[in-house]
Image 1 (spheres, rainbow, N blue to C red):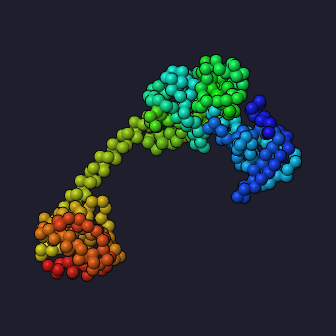
Image 2 (image 1 turned 30 degrees about the vertical axis):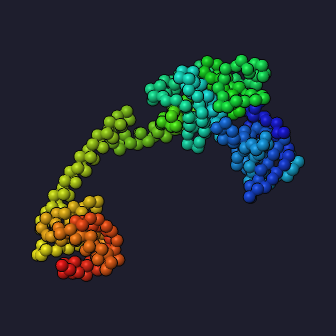
Image 3 (image 1 turned 45 degrees about the vertical axis):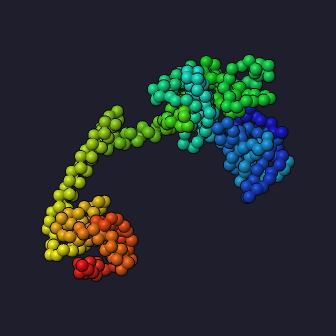
Length: 382
């Protein structure tokens, strides 16, 4: 069995070990050591990475009680190696795991809800709570959680005796047997946990809840702690500062400035739509109608313009065809006051490789062919 150095001292960054076994599967190498400080993925915390000898450790996980280091190359059985952790990655995970304990413990204390899911992702940490909370309640939890950071409360790890464990009140997602590792943050949380944590809450620096959404009858909360929370704040502050410059507004007034800009854009969009309608009406009024059937060939009309234009022309002619596009590829709308639009549309689509559908009064779709040929067929096909 591999000696688990991370359980007794999570601050070990380098260690000496001997290779017990190295196996290959599908071009991937998995190395077992007689001792390791690499934490294997579990309990929502990702596996550690770093180096073992000359090999890069891409990930660490546990299978059937064996800790496997996924390396980029094989290592020789019996070889003595030096293991070096990616300490920045590990320490960030320790901070975030500690922050999650404090938040989950407070929610359990204050509202009686349990953390039923926990995941440390590359972008943020998520916790799933099996009860509904308001944003105001979650913000109150965040404030109290950061009080634990300011008070620099200890984060203690113990393995109680079976007798002591029976009388101990602690959080756990499932029933546990044998040695149970308990992580306790006095006044804030007591939980069964296999992960790595900082020794005191002050090392977490900052706990920030980012968002909350309804999830499976409860809520899912996104959060960050420690170095990652500080970086997240820095990135968002930079973005708000840049936006404030673009809007010529103070950083604290960016929301109001964006809201005003949205209203102005909505007003301008409405005005533009009205102007387009007026121009389309003028265009239809000026179109030369000399018979019962008219065909208009236009450039690329947007949105509902094609249909609206056909309806305007239909006030002046019994049958209307509007083509929109170019280079032999057309979108079309066909109207017929005598309710023969589907019949004409089917015949036209057969002749000009088209498709579409609609009602006896109007059909629309696509056609392929020369515009003047289509126009001539339509206007003379009574």
